Image (cartoon, rainbow, N blue to C red; front, side):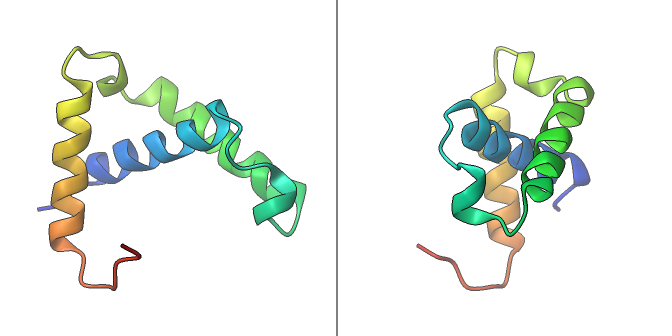
Length: 79
């Protein structure tokens, strides 16, 4: 069963990858700079809410959360 914690962990990892690696500049994917700002604010709030990213078993927890979400999802995968 997918939990909100699973979703928060997967979203946090995605947002960190986008923002920390500068992989997604605002002009390339957003209609307005405010959309980028909202996602960055969400990333920052998740960073202070989640304790998993600071645990030694973070990668395992992330993998398990991703797997639960992927297994429960009935939409089409981009892969």
